[in-house]
Image 1: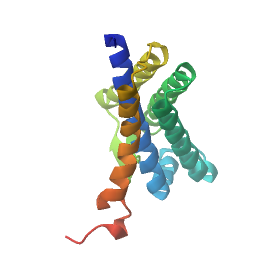
Image 2: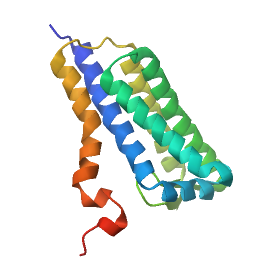
Image 3: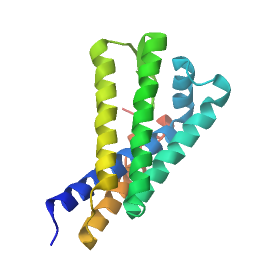
Image 4: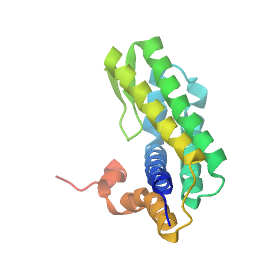
Length: 177
């Protein structure tokens, strides 16, 4: 019989797999824009911005795939938590250094004047995501095949959306309005 803790573990795994896969794919799909965003944020040196975007994308996709496979959950969960904590720390450093906050994860670089509530919201969101990753790392998972299939489906959904939805493709592939 599956316990509530196992159900929570699998639900969190679904969330983490779809989140990491979607953000990793979005960065790879728009690596030029994401690299420009890193350069504007003035934390990552210009010379390694492209490599940084590609490395982070590969790391996110790898973590999503490992979560979908469901093996090494303690190690993968902790690495995922540290990824989210690193993101929160990075965004905090950007806002302190530049007075702005920006996002280039989903295809367009947008910069906003950093506000206390906005920066706090980003940090809290990163802490919540890291907490969920730690839950996934340390809570016992279900051995039920149905739950394993759900996590794999969550991992595959962003890839399917990329193939089906023209708005996820390059701007040239978008239909005319």
